[in-house]
Image (cartoon, rainbow, N blue to C red; front, top):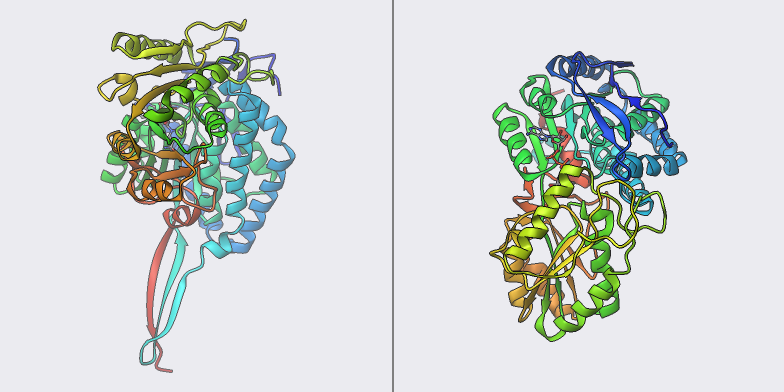
Length: 487
Ligand code: NAD
């Protein structure tokens, strides 16, 4: 779907597309060209209230639909998403900028969560134990919780919303979705396909906007639970305010993921893997590799080959399949990233590949090329902070222990990867590394949908991650029944 005209976005509340009650609109550029492709409403609390009312009303009947029948709607949705895969991927590239290959990968990962949601009859099952005492049975039953809200970031316009509402709705809840105001276009298509699957009105509602919508969600007493994915400061705010207001909250936050490269790694595959993890999706991934800790013995060889391969990556519009690195999301983010590169130079890191200089001819968009720093240390801002761009820091370490220690000093703990051919090193890494998601010779260790997805430390606020059994537990309330019958 290539837009030639500017699309005016609308909220979807109850059963129809409606304009927001506010007059405020924000322009959405195609990050590859700067061309304005849509206008998104920046909704207010009244819009949230209407959406919550619609969801509350729908909950009465939806929560009573049998679990297998709810799963049948999800099967239909799955089928429609499958049929429209390529169109969905193109919209992602258009509004987010990532390459079409990365967008197709995102569509696939999103669809896998919908596949998971089709197995809700199994996932929601309780437990039972007869004769917990003479003539007494015990059992656990799972029920939906009510109206759930989801707040999502710009970097995965399809996958992250799909972490949330399909499973929540399959569990019998109704949903208010607020996607990123920087990538709102795909959400409208996801909602259209959702209702084409036959879901009853009000089950899924979409409210466009920014922090006012988020703060209204946090305050709304009818919302029982919030799923949030975004940057660390906002995740913390959402978690603290949401829980203070008595809501269940899972808030997935920022990251600074490390890879440890051992001398017994498969060098070629490691380089290919690190490049994919660091520069794929222009580094705008919460699981992007941002730091490589390479052991001294192989550091020179690794860095020389890494630099040579990185220089081959083409930068440009993600719709052109020759390009590996697309634009960043906005000009303002590009400026922020250039500031980080300047700070790395000023703090004494050795700039080996300079993404400020792009050799390919690129359109007017927000491009920064792949960037590699060597001789980075933990006092530098480029090591400490999430840059969210194709900027990779290399730190030289003496051995595995030092690599693990360095990684564990990060305030974030989302993903971490080791490249090695030693089972013993891999085992030590798994046991000692502080990260929610660990990879062994796997470049981006994002779990499949049937496992939970969440980090540790400042990368996650909450108890239950998204997806898998965690997701089902988050979206359901338990009752433990102890029963005795006299006749
Ligand atoms: P962001 O925090 O700016 O925005 C996320 C959501 O919060 C958006 O819907 C936005 O409208 C809202 N928001 C922004 N500022 C707010 C404020 N002051 N008050 C209330 N709400 C506010 O994040 P982003 O830039 O869209 O996304 C990138 C971030 O998301 C990165 O930090 C990345 O690591 C993180 N992320 C984490 C995961 C994960 O699984 N841990 C996955 C994807 C992205």
